[in-house]
Image (tube, rainbow, N blue to C red; front, side, top):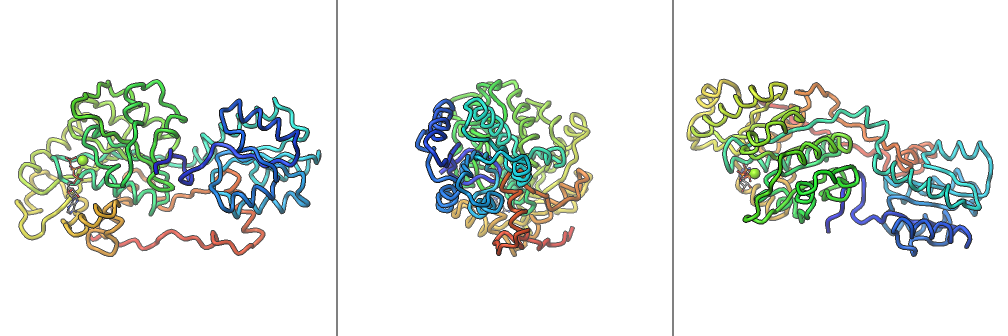
Length: 434
Ligand SMILES: Nc1ncnc2c1ncn2[C@@H]1O[C@H](COP(=O)(O)OP(=O)(O)OP(=O)(O)O)[C@@H](O)[C@H]1O
Ligand SMILES: [Mg+2]
């Protein structure tokens, strides 16, 4: 049940629906729908009322065209859409009222466009093309405002829990911090993110590597697999006998697309790739170096940190003990820290029970670890990362600039008893004990 990624998008959303009020409009809209490759049956009669009825029981499309001809009070009636339409949908209205004031007021509610009837096919085509562009970049002005943070998660040795940290971080950044987050699993053959989240990785990442020139906003939208409303992953399960030949250009291109499409990007970066694609680190702000507390890991932590200092001096690092045995550590934390000449920033306790539970449920470990020592330790990670990049805005503002975001505002003004009101972010932030 994978769906391509779009922030705020429901699991199955069609590209386009139209609800018109007359045959002429239906014909014109159908012609454009066919031109765009959309099913003609997505053009239906019913106008605004029909749209509200239909969308109350089905997922909203990416682009919605509603005919306001039969609406007695278009401005008030259109707020009804907010009750049923999901955020992110771009709405175009059409109607018979040729009144600039109404036009302006409608646009101020967040409508993408208002077209006068009878519909002109060229105007309609333009409006739909613009709506597509708006959908591709739905966060528009917010884009400039948001601070994108790109994080690499690197294990110093195999099996230290790096991927577990990366998946959990993806979950926390998206769920707790409310940031749209991309999770890129560069362990092309053996990556576990899709598996951990109970998703099919699809071919997106392999396609990207094979055809880097195809990587653009649209590609990202289609290729990324949605884990939650705000978390999307790109990963592969490349056949073991198939080497993935790349000069790393595809990865750079992906990270650059992530920068405009997401507020956070997390890259699970197998340590072998550091040397193979050192240029990848140019796009990264924070590296989470995950280790276990063993002699060999102390050696490799020293080498990993040293590599980062030499090759990516701009990158801030956080050192995380991925699964710390408290009972029988191979070497003590103190000895480890002394030998790597820095403190471990976060210690994640070893917890076999939670690890097994997460695997059974197909969820990131942090999601099932709430109210546990492990959960508390994890909870400090996002803030430590954001502090590294000087981003103290822990609660990302995700006000939509698209219609439904704005209509949400109208809803508030109309003081309809909305379930949206009072929506709160989980605020239980365990304090860092370290
Ligand atoms: N805190 C923890 N307590 C117990 N088990 C854990 C913990 N964190 C991770 N694990 C388990 O350790 C195993 C290895 O974890 P993971 O795959 O994240 O490591 P990795 O460093 O990414 O490994 P690889 O080198 O294969 O990429 C997994 O089975 C995972 O469920
Ligand atoms: Mg891994």
